[in-house]
Image 1 (spheres, rainbow, N blue to C red):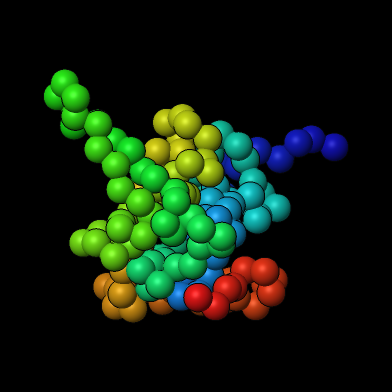
Image 2: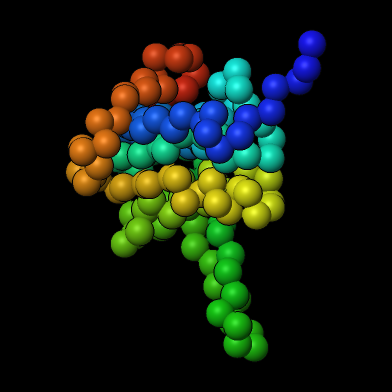
Length: 154
């Protein structure tokens, strides 16, 4: 019995839409990362991009457990001397680009290589409920009903 290794002709990419309203951020990110890599498919091949295209809507309504909204700090550097800056997760979610919280969480759950950077291009995150991918006929993936721990009222 030979080990199956997928080729580009074997890969079948689907479009999946996930509503992030009320879903815990870490649990959402792990499910999205698994879908992006294609680990949910029996034909998973580690060195091929066999994952699905994922659309996440309502990213501004994602939930966090504990005090992460106020205590979790995101740092970045401007490139200038003394240019370290920081914002809390709550400030980012209430700011101009709340979808960056979800993007960063998913990115950090993927391995740090060229393939994962290619797989991140298959992720689209929108702060509101509107998205422009109706033509692709995305299937709805209900993350809330997968496990009761996936949701949180807040």
